[in-house]
Image (tube, rainbow, N blue to C red; front, top):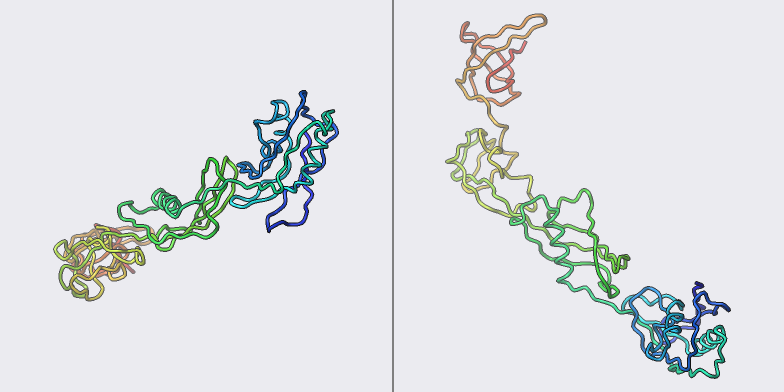
Length: 336
């Protein structure tokens, strides 16, 4: 089937023109019956990307064969969603005359009723702020690493015209692979109507995350070891400092504070040393490791220490002090 092309003409009332092109002398789809009247509609709403001749005519006035023929003839692209195009009535009349002649009929025997102005618009749907917010929040809840009940979404806004053609709408949301879904989050939403991509909107919102943070229940002095009695938990907004404060038990257990901490002050990770695996007086195995020789001896540590720390250890048998490096909670290696 040959598609009928458009030939642009002057703009009328700032509406883009929609102008039928030439008719093939032998259309691939032919009407076998006669026709006595073609009534063109003054205002036409379409849902597809392309406009057919049948869509701008009163279907009740067309015999089935002619409705099929005219429905197969594309007279141009539909206007964008929410806008209009017009069809020049003079060119449309000439086009219909050629079409009637191509079917072996006398155009004088067919009544052509064509308005002075034919307006074609594409049905559209305006997306609401609520719809876009719901799409954004759903995406955050499905992709955020944070617990849903710890997250709030605020100040959702978008860029772009939220108007799409009418039809079955679907959408896809995309974010940067580096997105952490906290703080100011930006995504793109591609909208599809009847399977065809029709609009892309940039959507941004503020994602606030709340978490349980450990606070000092009393004033703490530098180098104090933490105990459960020294701590209290409070849920606070950690959006701007999610990696700053202690939020898990393993981040405070067997730790000492590296500076003075006031009462009810959150414990910052940088102010806590690494976990202690040895406390002053703990028994350990001292490993004397030299090329070709490894000897062990019982020892007792003289200070608190974590893995990798250097400290003094007393050899229980010789009573000598040995400088060692902590390997784990039971073993140290003598340093030479």
